[in-house]
Structure formats: structure tokens, C-alpha cells
Image 1 (cartoon, rainbow, N blue to C red):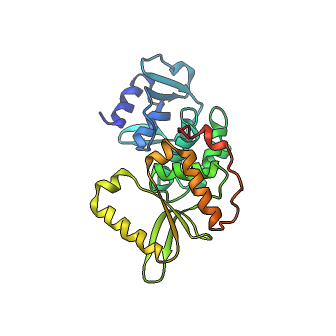
Image 2 (cartoon, rainbow, N blue to C red):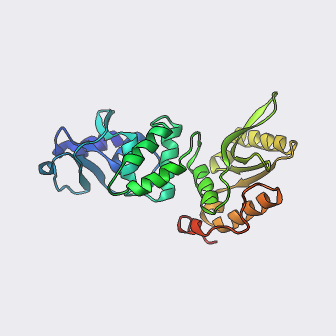
Image 3 (cartoon, rainbow, N blue to C red):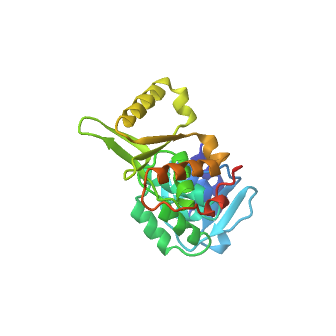
Length: 260
């Protein structure tokens, strides 16, 4: 059963004014969220509330509602704030990056909506919205960027084009002042030989221009985030990147509980 059909089924007992919200709306929109149990419905009148197994009913006087594949669902910017009651900071930024990248909402609209929001999740939504960026290609790129920022390092540019007038290549995260590039290499790259060969050629080309490229895989973020930060910190200091602190902040540890 599709997410839209699941949403329609959840809405049946709640009347025509109800809509799918929170994780249910997120699944209909196709945004990347962790597996979360149950469905979520929002109603505008207390008398419309119902007790249903596996359905959480929320009460709200009004809301921004769209219709997608026959289901009434919260608008993307509203979903973002709703999810702030269900997700961590990192997972919420991943949602925001995806929404902006895929045109579900523009960045300024998202931030304005979060600035005006109140109630549960509003503060976290505002913090997360400040970390959302345009043009991010994958959740793992978001994770790597947030690991860096939460450790107190300068924020890298997203998808910087590097090269000359003949050929310009795009890289995940970059520091143009110190000519340092950070690339996330996902499993799908290894599985696709053509993509893997293209990546090798791209990386060899950047070496010719005196850029330094650091490549990371999933375990560097999930299992050894501390060692990953030490590696980035060392290279940025050696290459003279402005604004690099002598010691890293410990704030990242609350969000990336890897082995080190």
C-alpha cells in the first residue's frame, strides 16, 4: 500500500476537515525520515478527535494543507515543524535539505514559517532550518556537513564547481581558500562501475590543480566520527584554512554517538 493510501485510510474516521500530518505526511511527500511507527492525523475541532489503534490524533485550529494523490496532507513547511517533535536535529536538517533540493519548499519560505511557529518543536525547527542548505544531493552529505559544523569547524561550501573555462567539476563539500575538498563515497558509487570510474577521473583532475581531496564512507560518520573530525581538522590547519579553531567543540558528540 502506498503512503498516500495509508494516509487516506488513517483519515477515514476523522471527517473531511482532517488531514495527514507529521510522519504520515512526510511519507506521502517522499522525504527521507527514519522508520517511525503509526500514522498521524490532525483535526481542527476537539469533537473530531478519535481513539484509533496505531493512529495519533493531533488538534490544531488551522493549518496549511495540500492534496497529494487524493490525500489531504500538511504542506512541506508545516511538516518540517511537525517533524521537529519526532526527529533529531540531524534527521530534521536532512529533511529540510531534501525538501529544498527537490523543490517542495524554498529555503526562505521554510525559514520564515519556522520563525513564526510556536508550540512543540518550534525551537528545534528554527535551529534546524538555520542549518538547511540549497543543492544538497544526499542525506550522508548533510550528515558530514553537520558533523563538521557542530564540531566548531568552518562550514564548507555545498557542491562547489571547481575547474577552469574548459571543464568544471562539482564536489560535495569544499573550502576554496585552502583548496580542500570533502567527498562522501556511498555504496551506490561502488556498485555502479561507470560512476566509480568517473569519480576516479574527477579526483585525479583535481589533484593536478593542487587541491587536496578527502574521501569518506559511511563508517567514518556512523562508527568513527571523532577520528573523521581529527582528520579534517588536521588537514584544514595544515593548509591554512581561515577560522579553524585550535581545538574542536564537543557539541557534535550529542548528535553523532559513534565509537570515537
